[in-house]
Image 1 (cartoon, rainbow, N blue to C red):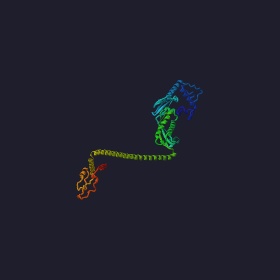
Image 2: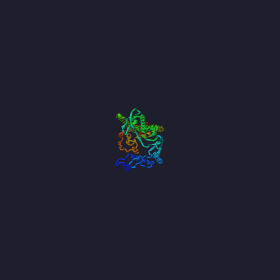
Image 3: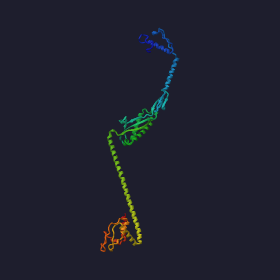
Length: 413
């Protein structure tokens, strides 16, 4: 009852209302609702009942039934409307009927039977989830229990990596995996230890990081598919691969020594690559020159032999003529290359034996600048030049002619 009610404060001036009067007013209102004609039941203003009896309450069931029907219809509409739900573009809806899988719904406005008959779960299938193995948050926050593992050559390495995954099957994700992150973590540890255990330490630390990440992702996907977790491995990123901190200094020294070894090997190989080709080239050049000299000498020898045979044939036909011809050719060959003049001093004549100046001009040689010595007469010296004429040239024979011919050929070569 509000303060504006006309019955407020009627029993006592400026005092609280009478409880009996409140009860009677409530009964009157209830009787009005259920169809009973109103009456104050007695004494009106002072709130007494006058000693009379209140009549029994009568209920109008037709009015009451209509109100309940409208209420039930409204409740039914609200109950059915509770079955509507919205699935975003990055999500998938999973409908459950009495807790059992019913169907998977696509994005959009969807409807299902209201609870408790059916219920639904909305799963994000495009969101990328990340699991860190061997560290938490930053590489400095290491988790040795997860990071330390054994290689094939019985060395301990610390491996830290991150796994990113998506959901490819909402049904398997909801019903076959109690904790997806734990499932991915367990599969990641199993896969990385198997892959690292099959490789050498140097391969794990240096050149094989990408291959190890790819093999780990493939093995993880096989394990998760085998358990039907509905998880798709997107990538495996290697954050850090290094030896344990306790042996880091010794390991750095060993790595530096290995690098020095490789550097020296490369320098030696570079020197060998520079010297060996040059030596091979010089050897090939010398061999080619020797072969060329050999071929030239053989060809010259064969040519001389063939020419000697031809000369011998002609010599047998006319020995005297051939001897004179050989002598003349030899003298011509000898005297064309000298500027000396021979004078017959024995016979007392100043006649020159051969026109040497004309022969020298014909051969293209420069004109002799030496002056011809004067002949004093019969009493002159036997020779007016620095070199006397050898006696063999006065009466040449065949042997001297052949020697002169060979000397001439050697001088040409």
